[in-house]
Length: 340
Image (cartoon, rainbow, N blue to C red; front, top):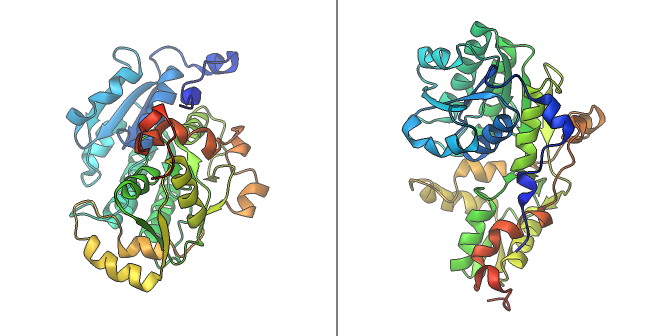
């Protein structure tokens, strides 16, 4: 099994020098209990920050506390629909980070409520307490997109920068890592299904970025190494089509499966029913998103608004995927059997 301890490197002298005075400086992270949040919490705890994690259910965020010293990480209650709770969670913070986001709408958790209204409340709270703001958006966010997810992300960016003009915005591409919702989901499907769908033919391009690199980007922004009022685009070292990603996945889990091109119209029709599930495999809005490439722009590269611009060398898929996708192989981590 490939070693993925890259997530927890030994601290260099430069990292040690970046540590703030022990337990004196506070950062509040909204949505810090999720996939990306857990890694951001750990990165900041390692640098000595006191971390307040603002979530709807603090009782379900106990898994974060072992990531730091005793008393260093404290989950608190906050709900983006209630501005008073958002402001209360920001009080005393030097830096506020907004990681809250949803991949599909469910009940009150609509894109408008979470990505736009919620982002505005966090930004207003940061402004009220005089904290710096770092906001997570998504690569592909655009007010002109026909996908509601992308439009709501763009609206959230605008709301954050309107309230705090010096805010730093991070736009990651597909984020991968041990608990991701992309490779794990398709690997689980490949374990059970004889075929995987290529929506729209599978030609959409992606630039997957390792969650550890995203967390380090946030840590450097907290450390003051990001330019205020700047939108950073975070992508890995490889640009691959959806089809190529599925081929890479199948090779890693040692399974042969058919890759069936599926017209976007047919995918949208199927998604109409799938999105009724509590945790849908596909929604119509996601089908619309798959019509657009999800890669770092040439402008961001030229202007240094990338991982490399923050001094981070992006991690390749091949160095990380084997460390957590082995569990989808027929014989697990102990051997690489012939394809099933």
